[in-house]
Image (cartoon, rainbow, N blue to C red; front, top):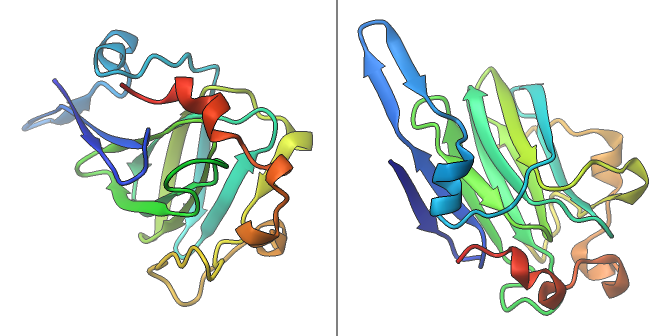
Amino acid sequence: MLEKTKTNIEGVVIFKPQVFHDHRGFFIETFSNKKYFSAGLTETFVQDNFSHSSRNTIRGLHYQKTKPQGKLVRVAQGIVFDVAVDIRVGSPTFGNYFSTILDDKAFNQLYMPPGIAHGFCVLSEFAVFEYKCTEYYYPEDEAGVLFNDPDIAIDWPVDDARLSEKDLSYPKLSDIAKKNLPDYHLLIKHQLK
């Protein structure tokens, strides 16, 4: 059984897969096209990514300008504070964010449709983070929003964050030309029903 919960941002949903526990440990089906399709996720995933990060690392807020990626993210080990920011021009929730805890206990997953900027912060000693993408990664198309943009006002749960130079150099959302942001109306087809 696969539970689905909508969030405050259209198209961004939490999936709660079934976890089978016994005296040996546990088993979880991390993805089944048939089950997710039945839950309304009809996207085709073309790339899987894996990262290992240490405590207080923030990665994000990332997006691709002309080839936006939908992402189904999860934590295989550890705990992260995960964030989805609506940067789709014309969206009723443009500039809003949704955050949740993803960990290796509940194994919840977060789906973000194309046009959402994504980031996360590691709360455990380290975290193994995995995600499926609906579009390939194109380095020349990569972009980002400043993680501590005061207009978005994400309440990151760390004071001594560790970020890459690239992530620290991203502009505020209000300083990004609209032509360099995804268009909500062009991406509406990617939203879950």
